[in-house]
Image (cartoon, rainbow, N blue to C red; front, top):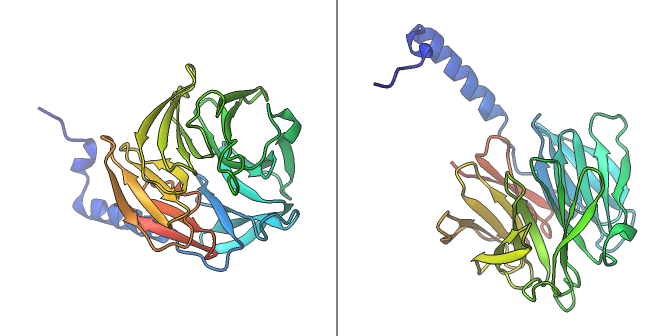
Length: 293
Protein backbone atom coordinates (compact mmCIF):
# COMPACT_ATOMS: atom_id res chain seq x y z
CA UNK A 1 0.00 0.00 0.00
CA UNK A 2 1.37 3.42 -0.99
CA UNK A 3 2.03 5.66 1.99
CA UNK A 4 0.79 9.25 1.88
CA UNK A 5 3.39 11.99 2.34
CA UNK A 6 3.64 13.59 5.75
CA UNK A 7 2.24 16.77 4.25
CA UNK A 8 -1.19 15.12 4.36
CA UNK A 9 -1.41 15.52 8.14
CA UNK A 10 -0.91 19.28 8.06
CA UNK A 11 -3.88 21.42 9.14
CA UNK A 12 -6.24 22.17 6.26
CA UNK A 13 -5.90 25.92 6.68
CA UNK A 14 -2.11 25.69 6.36
CA UNK A 15 -2.43 23.59 3.22
CA UNK A 16 -4.91 25.97 1.62
CA UNK A 17 -2.78 28.99 2.52
CA UNK A 18 0.40 27.39 1.17
CA UNK A 19 -1.27 26.35 -2.06
CA UNK A 20 -2.75 29.81 -2.55
CA UNK A 21 0.63 31.49 -2.05
CA UNK A 22 2.35 29.06 -4.42
CA UNK A 23 -0.34 29.56 -7.07
CA UNK A 24 -0.21 33.34 -6.73
CA UNK A 25 3.58 33.35 -7.06
CA UNK A 26 3.46 31.12 -10.11
CA UNK A 27 0.82 33.29 -11.75
CA UNK A 28 2.84 36.44 -11.16
CA UNK A 29 5.83 34.87 -12.94
CA UNK A 30 4.00 33.91 -16.14
CA UNK A 31 5.75 35.82 -18.97
CA UNK A 32 3.68 38.25 -20.98
CA UNK A 33 3.94 38.95 -24.72
CA UNK A 34 6.34 41.74 -25.68
CA UNK A 35 6.10 44.08 -28.67
CA UNK A 36 8.41 46.61 -30.34
CA UNK A 37 11.44 44.31 -30.45
CA UNK A 38 14.17 44.86 -33.04
CA UNK A 39 14.02 41.76 -35.27
CA UNK A 40 14.04 39.20 -32.42
CA UNK A 41 15.60 35.87 -33.38
CA UNK A 42 16.24 33.74 -30.29
CA UNK A 43 15.12 33.63 -26.66
CA UNK A 44 16.06 31.82 -23.44
CA UNK A 45 14.85 32.05 -19.84
CA UNK A 46 17.31 31.76 -16.97
CA UNK A 47 16.63 30.05 -13.64
CA UNK A 48 15.95 33.43 -11.99
CA UNK A 49 13.13 34.11 -14.44
CA UNK A 50 14.95 36.66 -16.59
CA UNK A 51 14.33 36.33 -20.32
CA UNK A 52 17.09 37.11 -22.81
CA UNK A 53 16.22 37.97 -26.42
CA UNK A 54 18.66 38.38 -29.31
CA UNK A 55 17.74 41.29 -31.56
CA UNK A 56 19.30 41.38 -35.01
CA UNK A 57 17.88 44.84 -35.78
CA UNK A 58 19.01 45.66 -39.33
CA UNK A 59 19.91 42.35 -40.97
CA UNK A 60 23.46 42.44 -42.32
CA UNK A 61 24.22 45.74 -40.57
CA UNK A 62 27.14 45.09 -38.23
CA UNK A 63 27.15 46.79 -34.86
CA UNK A 64 23.43 47.45 -34.44
CA UNK A 65 22.45 44.14 -32.83
CA UNK A 66 21.79 43.69 -29.13
CA UNK A 67 20.63 41.42 -26.31
CA UNK A 68 17.53 42.55 -24.45
CA UNK A 69 16.63 41.44 -20.91
CA UNK A 70 13.02 41.10 -19.77
CA UNK A 71 13.06 40.89 -15.99
CA UNK A 72 9.50 40.13 -14.83
CA UNK A 73 8.09 42.76 -17.15
CA UNK A 74 10.93 45.27 -16.89
CA UNK A 75 13.01 45.67 -20.04
CA UNK A 76 16.64 46.71 -20.42
CA UNK A 77 19.53 46.13 -22.81
CA UNK A 78 22.25 43.78 -21.60
CA UNK A 79 24.61 44.19 -24.52
CA UNK A 80 24.89 46.47 -27.55
CA UNK A 81 27.17 46.63 -30.57
CA UNK A 82 26.63 43.11 -31.88
CA UNK A 83 26.42 42.21 -35.56
CA UNK A 84 23.56 39.78 -36.29
CA UNK A 85 22.98 37.94 -32.97
CA UNK A 86 20.88 34.82 -33.34
CA UNK A 87 20.99 31.62 -31.27
CA UNK A 88 21.31 31.84 -27.48
CA UNK A 89 22.29 29.20 -24.93
CA UNK A 90 22.81 29.27 -21.18
CA UNK A 91 25.40 27.21 -19.32
CA UNK A 92 25.26 28.11 -15.64
CA UNK A 93 25.67 31.88 -15.38
CA UNK A 94 27.18 32.24 -18.84
CA UNK A 95 25.17 33.32 -21.87
CA UNK A 96 26.45 32.20 -25.28
CA UNK A 97 25.53 34.09 -28.45
CA UNK A 98 25.87 33.06 -32.10
CA UNK A 99 26.83 36.39 -33.67
CA UNK A 100 27.17 36.06 -37.44
CA UNK A 101 30.55 34.30 -37.83
CA UNK A 102 31.63 33.98 -34.19
CA UNK A 103 30.31 32.75 -30.86
CA UNK A 104 30.43 35.13 -27.91
CA UNK A 105 30.06 34.50 -24.20
CA UNK A 106 28.82 36.83 -21.46
CA UNK A 107 29.26 36.39 -17.71
CA UNK A 108 25.81 37.30 -16.37
CA UNK A 109 27.18 37.91 -12.87
CA UNK A 110 29.46 40.71 -14.10
CA UNK A 111 28.39 44.35 -14.17
CA UNK A 112 28.54 45.88 -16.64
CA UNK A 113 28.08 42.90 -18.96
CA UNK A 114 30.91 42.34 -21.41
CA UNK A 115 31.06 40.01 -24.40
CA UNK A 116 34.13 37.87 -25.02
CA UNK A 117 34.86 35.79 -28.09
CA UNK A 118 34.41 32.10 -27.23
CA UNK A 119 34.80 30.70 -30.76
CA UNK A 120 36.38 32.94 -33.38
CA UNK A 121 35.53 32.66 -37.07
CA UNK A 122 39.03 31.33 -37.75
CA UNK A 123 38.49 28.35 -35.42
CA UNK A 124 35.89 26.66 -37.65
CA UNK A 125 36.74 23.89 -40.09
CA UNK A 126 35.33 25.99 -42.92
CA UNK A 127 34.77 29.76 -42.83
CA UNK A 128 31.32 30.13 -41.20
CA UNK A 129 28.63 31.65 -43.38
CA UNK A 130 25.57 31.94 -41.14
CA UNK A 131 26.01 30.84 -37.52
CA UNK A 132 22.47 30.27 -36.36
CA UNK A 133 21.41 28.14 -33.41
CA UNK A 134 23.14 27.10 -30.19
CA UNK A 135 22.36 24.47 -27.57
CA UNK A 136 24.23 22.83 -24.71
CA UNK A 137 24.31 19.42 -23.06
CA UNK A 138 24.60 18.50 -19.38
CA UNK A 139 28.39 18.24 -19.65
CA UNK A 140 28.81 21.87 -20.69
CA UNK A 141 29.46 21.14 -24.37
CA UNK A 142 28.08 23.68 -26.83
CA UNK A 143 26.60 22.79 -30.23
CA UNK A 144 26.55 25.27 -33.11
CA UNK A 145 24.67 25.25 -36.41
CA UNK A 146 26.02 27.04 -39.45
CA UNK A 147 23.11 27.32 -41.88
CA UNK A 148 25.46 27.93 -44.79
CA UNK A 149 24.04 29.73 -47.82
CA UNK A 150 20.60 29.79 -46.24
CA UNK A 151 19.43 32.80 -48.25
CA UNK A 152 20.82 31.55 -51.56
CA UNK A 153 21.36 27.93 -52.56
CA UNK A 154 20.03 26.60 -49.23
CA UNK A 155 23.12 24.41 -48.91
CA UNK A 156 26.58 24.46 -47.41
CA UNK A 157 25.62 24.15 -43.75
CA UNK A 158 27.35 22.33 -40.91
CA UNK A 159 27.00 21.38 -37.25
CA UNK A 160 29.81 21.70 -34.72
CA UNK A 161 30.54 20.72 -31.13
CA UNK A 162 32.81 22.74 -28.88
CA UNK A 163 33.92 21.59 -25.43
CA UNK A 164 34.43 23.85 -22.40
CA UNK A 165 38.15 23.59 -23.23
CA UNK A 166 37.46 25.14 -26.68
CA UNK A 167 38.05 21.89 -28.60
CA UNK A 168 35.93 22.20 -31.74
CA UNK A 169 34.73 19.21 -33.80
CA UNK A 170 32.77 19.06 -37.04
CA UNK A 171 29.78 16.74 -36.48
CA UNK A 172 27.90 16.96 -39.77
CA UNK A 173 27.94 18.67 -43.14
CA UNK A 174 26.91 17.97 -46.72
CA UNK A 175 30.10 16.07 -47.48
CA UNK A 176 29.32 13.58 -44.70
CA UNK A 177 25.63 13.27 -45.56
CA UNK A 178 23.91 14.92 -48.53
CA UNK A 179 20.78 15.51 -46.43
CA UNK A 180 22.62 18.16 -44.42
CA UNK A 181 21.65 21.33 -46.28
CA UNK A 182 20.99 24.28 -43.97
CA UNK A 183 20.86 22.94 -40.40
CA UNK A 184 19.18 25.37 -38.05
CA UNK A 185 17.58 24.39 -34.72
CA UNK A 186 19.55 22.08 -32.42
CA UNK A 187 18.69 20.23 -29.21
CA UNK A 188 21.08 17.95 -27.32
CA UNK A 189 19.81 15.10 -25.17
CA UNK A 190 20.77 14.73 -21.51
CA UNK A 191 23.58 12.28 -22.28
CA UNK A 192 25.18 14.31 -25.03
CA UNK A 193 25.01 11.25 -27.30
CA UNK A 194 22.29 12.45 -29.67
CA UNK A 195 21.38 15.78 -31.17
CA UNK A 196 18.04 16.77 -32.69
CA UNK A 197 18.50 18.92 -35.78
CA UNK A 198 15.92 20.57 -38.04
CA UNK A 199 16.97 21.64 -41.52
CA UNK A 200 15.78 25.02 -42.76
CA UNK A 201 15.88 24.03 -46.43
CA UNK A 202 14.21 20.61 -46.28
CA UNK A 203 12.02 21.09 -43.20
CA UNK A 204 13.09 17.67 -41.92
CA UNK A 205 13.75 16.88 -38.25
CA UNK A 206 16.67 14.50 -37.71
CA UNK A 207 18.38 12.78 -34.82
CA UNK A 208 22.16 12.88 -35.12
CA UNK A 209 24.15 10.11 -33.44
CA UNK A 210 27.14 12.14 -32.32
CA UNK A 211 29.61 9.27 -31.96
CA UNK A 212 28.65 7.60 -35.22
CA UNK A 213 27.87 10.89 -37.01
CA UNK A 214 24.79 9.31 -38.61
CA UNK A 215 21.38 10.88 -39.25
CA UNK A 216 17.96 9.34 -38.62
CA UNK A 217 14.82 11.10 -39.87
CA UNK A 218 12.27 11.70 -37.11
CA UNK A 219 9.59 13.78 -38.83
CA UNK A 220 9.12 16.18 -41.73
CA UNK A 221 6.91 18.99 -43.01
CA UNK A 222 8.35 21.86 -40.97
CA UNK A 223 8.85 24.28 -43.87
CA UNK A 224 11.69 26.54 -42.79
CA UNK A 225 12.52 24.62 -39.63
CA UNK A 226 13.97 26.94 -37.00
CA UNK A 227 13.85 26.27 -33.23
CA UNK A 228 13.52 23.01 -31.26
CA UNK A 229 12.63 22.42 -27.59
CA UNK A 230 11.57 19.38 -25.59
CA UNK A 231 9.28 19.30 -22.56
CA UNK A 232 10.05 17.07 -19.58
CA UNK A 233 7.37 14.63 -20.79
CA UNK A 234 9.27 14.12 -24.06
CA UNK A 235 7.06 16.25 -26.31
CA UNK A 236 9.09 18.17 -28.88
CA UNK A 237 8.12 21.54 -30.39
CA UNK A 238 9.47 22.87 -33.68
CA UNK A 239 8.99 26.32 -35.20
CA UNK A 240 8.58 26.99 -38.93
CA UNK A 241 10.07 30.37 -39.81
CA UNK A 242 8.91 30.44 -43.43
CA UNK A 243 5.24 29.68 -42.74
CA UNK A 244 4.88 31.26 -39.30
CA UNK A 245 3.85 28.10 -37.48
CA UNK A 246 4.70 26.10 -34.36
CA UNK A 247 4.30 22.32 -34.34
CA UNK A 248 4.21 19.59 -31.71
CA UNK A 249 5.95 16.25 -32.26
CA UNK A 250 4.78 13.45 -29.97
CA UNK A 251 6.99 10.56 -28.88
CA UNK A 252 5.69 8.41 -31.70
CA UNK A 253 6.64 11.02 -34.30
CA UNK A 254 3.10 12.32 -34.87
CA UNK A 255 3.16 15.98 -35.93
CA UNK A 256 0.34 18.40 -35.08
CA UNK A 257 -0.08 22.16 -35.40
CA UNK A 258 0.06 24.16 -32.18
CA UNK A 259 -0.31 27.71 -33.49
CA UNK A 260 -0.06 29.61 -36.77
CA UNK A 261 -0.40 33.20 -37.93
CA UNK A 262 3.11 34.41 -37.13
CA UNK A 263 5.00 36.41 -39.72
CA UNK A 264 8.15 34.38 -38.97
CA UNK A 265 8.31 32.06 -35.95
CA UNK A 266 12.01 32.00 -35.06
CA UNK A 267 14.09 30.23 -32.36
CA UNK A 268 11.68 29.14 -29.63
CA UNK A 269 12.33 28.35 -25.94
CA UNK A 270 10.54 26.79 -22.99
CA UNK A 271 10.01 28.68 -19.77
CA UNK A 272 11.58 27.34 -16.59
CA UNK A 273 8.24 25.93 -15.41
CA UNK A 274 8.02 23.84 -18.61
CA UNK A 275 4.47 25.18 -19.10
CA UNK A 276 4.94 27.97 -21.63
CA UNK A 277 6.54 28.34 -25.03
CA UNK A 278 8.31 31.58 -25.92
CA UNK A 279 8.08 32.41 -29.63
CA UNK A 280 10.01 35.30 -31.22
CA UNK A 281 8.09 36.55 -34.25
CA UNK A 282 11.06 38.06 -36.06
CA UNK A 283 9.39 40.12 -38.76
CA UNK A 284 6.60 41.30 -36.47
CA UNK A 285 9.07 42.40 -33.77
CA UNK A 286 7.18 40.53 -31.06
CA UNK A 287 7.68 37.84 -28.45
CA UNK A 288 4.64 35.61 -28.02
CA UNK A 289 3.83 33.25 -25.13
CA UNK A 290 1.95 29.99 -25.73
CA UNK A 291 0.54 28.14 -22.66
CA UNK A 292 1.16 24.39 -22.94
CA UNK A 293 -0.73 23.05 -19.94
